[in-house]
Length: 347
Image (tube, rainbow, N blue to C red; front, side, top):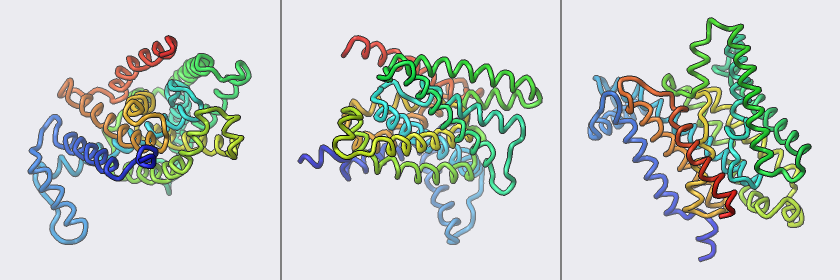
C-alpha cells in the first residue's frame, strides 16, 4: 500500500494518458473549421496506414486541415506544455520554492534573448534546422539561471522566495530593454520577433514536433531519475547531503536539464509564460509533494493545460487568433497572486 502511494501507479498512467489523448483529439477536431470526431479518426487511421505503406495517402478537405495544419501544431503544443511543466516542477523542488518557474525567475526571458539574437543577426547552422536559434536559447537560458541564482545568493544566503523573485523580475526587465535595443537594429524583422516573443505555435511542423519529442525524451529521463534527490531537497540541502546526495552534482545536472528544456521550447514556440508555475501547483493538490508522483502528473498536466490554452487562443476571437502566451499569462498571473498570497499568510 505504501508503494502505491509513493509511486505513480500503472492505472494512474493510463488515466492521465487517456485524458491527455482525449484533449488532444478535441483540440485537433475543434477550430475555425470543426471536423467531426468520426471523420478525424478515419483520417488518422488512413494516414497511419499510408505511413506504414498499407494504403494511399488520405485526401480531401478534412485531411489537409487535420494532417497538415492542426495535428503538428497540437503535437508541438502538447510537447511544449509537458516540457515547461516538468521544468517548473523540477525548479520548484530544487529551490524549495512554489513560485519558481522559468518565467518568474527570468530564465525564459534569457532564452528569448538568445533566440532573438539568433533571429536578428541570422545565426544559423545550415545542416541542422533551427540549430542556431535553439543553441542560443539553451545557452542563454542556462547562463540566465546561473546569474540569477548567483546574484540572489550573494544578497541572501537563504535564497528566500522574495529575493529570487525580485532578482528574476529585475533581470527580465533588463533583458526586455536589451531586446528592444536589438529590435531597433533589426527593424526589418520586428514583426517576426514581436509576435514570436508573445508565444505562438501557429506555424509548427512535424520537424518541430520531432525536435521537441527527442529533447523531452532525453531530458525527462534525467529528471525522472532524480525524483528521489528532489524529495531530499524538499527537506533541505544539508539533510540531502547527510543521506548521501551529491548536492553540487545533482543541482548542476538538473539546472542544465531545465535550461535545455526551456531553451528548446522557447526556440520553437517563443516565450510561453507561467505553464511551469500553474500546472505543478494544480497537480500537486492531487498527487501531493512526492516527486515520484508529481513529475509524471506534471508531464501529462502540462500537455493538457497548454493544449486547452491553445484551443482558447484559436477559438475565442475566431477568426482572429491570440498568441498562446497571452492566454497562459492571463491565467498564470491570477494563480501567481493566489499562491503568493497563500504563502504570505502561511497557509
